[in-house]
Image (cartoon, rainbow, N blue to C red; front, side):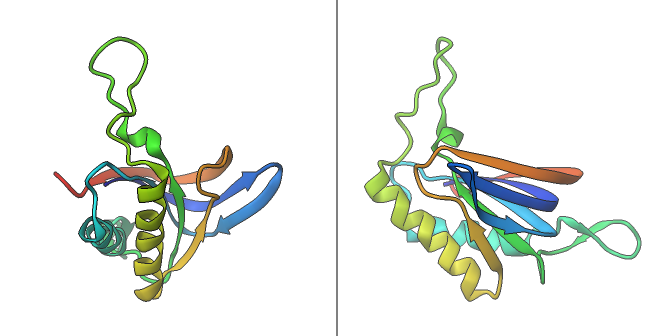
Length: 145
């Protein structure tokens, strides 16, 4: 499982012109589910999202975790793209929807269990994500790394 975390001042996601999720300060978590991922991977990603110290403390150092901030979680199979050969990405490593959806939902549920306010997009929908990067700060988390 792979997640790209972007620290944001605010973010929203629209589907068919309607806003389906919005947050203020927090992070956008783009989450890709790979073949072979399990509930343990979902737990790992949720723990990292909550625990990574991506926000500045009083001295201006990135030393604070997510805490009272929110997460906009977006399922994104393209994070599993294999671009090693040719110019057309291969998505063979992405889990099929029947596997990916429950694992994506498991990440979201684990975040909520930790007290995080979570907004989401719509699984498998064509979404427009709008965000204001803070920093910018962007990190990649991979449960298999």
